[in-house]
Length: 303
Image (cartoon, rainbow, N blue to C red; front, side, top):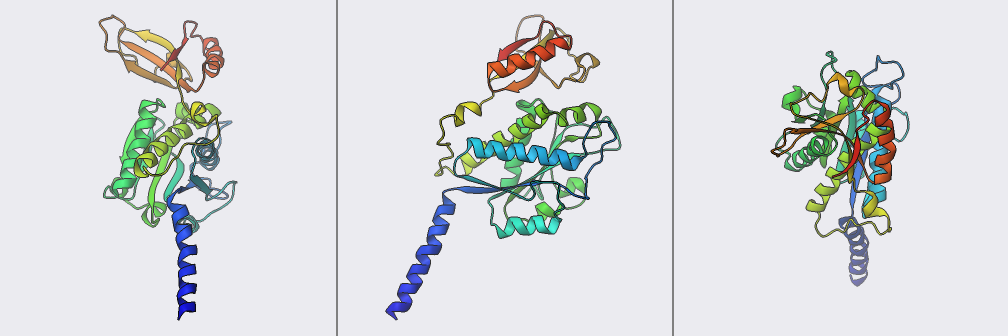
């Protein structure tokens, strides 16, 4: 009897140790949508990539940010190359690994080339944690990344369920990063800069969410360069105006512009910003290119 108890106690120690170690970290699965023969939304724009490639690039940027800037977070991918992974396999892999979070990365498409913006999908609005994370992602898109947010949506908005949201057993969000069918947004999504900013916005939302959800876990990276490099402190102001100008105005050409209304008595009540940069040196490098586009008076601005 004592031997049986000893074996049982030893098993509990081993299994309890695993549980304990997992309770001191979180595991996130990053799902790059589509892949292989399933290209997702196809592009009709010369030089652009189909959705499956954009999803993978953004997913890898996101995973790199998490691994570089957060401690006690393990990143798992559903795919890391242009391979076919079925929806069943994605769900099974997430549930079998017992991950804490599932982030599925996609790009959108529409028959109308005028439709643009980001969306974050959850299975149901009753999934409060998923909804909270999705809202934080959309807030980062609109407030920090300068994207047009179309909000948080669920199965009722789509009129159907998304398998990777319905059957995964953890907090799950599917992010639509923009429309490949909108020329201007497609230009952004096909640029390394755009992919990094989109990934950075999702990263910031994820970091803020898990920090609140797991107050006993330290997500501070032990490496010396982790915290400072993750901050985005600079942007570029390209113009100001007395009257409202649409940020899709042709004068802004291929730039992704964020319009800000100032609380001021000055006649110039609107400013127009481009980009998010971690260092002034990065911003100055981008500034040169923006000035070459005709914005001679553009300047670097600290956020």
